[in-house]
Image (cartoon, rainbow, N blue to C red; front, side, top):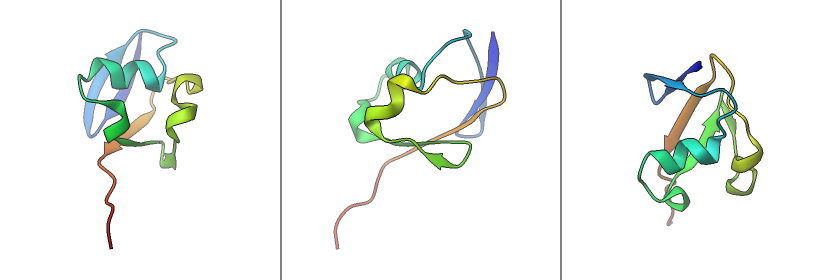
Length: 67
């Protein structure tokens, strides 16, 4: 097991969990969220390859669009 921080909440995940898998477990459409891990933006098409590690800080937020 690993421990990460998701939006200021600590979570225990199985080792090898990906960012895509974490987002699926949240029950929100992943396309509606922007993500960052340890302060670095992670594009949607890279989430399945981004394996989470013990101590990672994950932020999810709704992107702002418009002008």
